Image (cartoon, rainbow, N blue to C red; front, side, top):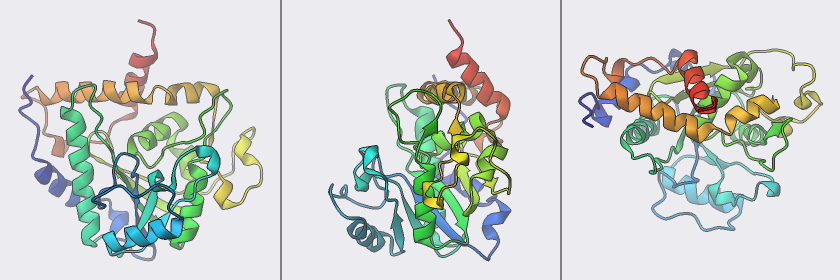
Length: 285
């Protein structure tokens, strides 16, 4: 199959940088890059040694980025070495050269996933840009809680890998934007590139925790999960890999048609497209 509409990643990245969400240019809060090093760190030439302390990891990464970094301290129950856990890079502003570089990386990852064979994994290391008035350690603490899975389903899973923006996109669809937006503080705005390499943004909204939600019990910010998934919602989340494979297959089909608008003009993945992908994966054959 040929793909006449596949753009050069550099050109698509520049198109996305020319249309970044307007909130990113607003001042008054810090900008942090969320990185998922599970399948490779974008700046370290060699993987960080296992068993390093958070202080040692921050020192190693801060040298590579030449920016302050904040490692997330995940509970021991996650069975994940600290070097594989997500971390934050404290950027200077949206004009920080590292932000533009991160957009290029994210676009390259998206395009790679469009062209990869079904059995090839394309790492998604860029979890997005987070705007917050919180200091780095406080924000890292709050995000640690968001990565703690809370669900009514019976499962041994404990880790909600939101630093992978594919998981974040699916979670936003499954839970609903308004539900996730109520859980964002101290993140004011979360911006990321979705499966179309198009900008998605979610802004914090004040609201009450829904009744019956296990997460409604009083907790410190570092203990607050993103939400409590119902059994049905968690069943949808467990199909994430198949859903994203299905989504990629549809993108490949779009890229093979000459009358399709180029990716630089694509809108974010719509609610209807997410629902169609979930229905296609979960419906009995």
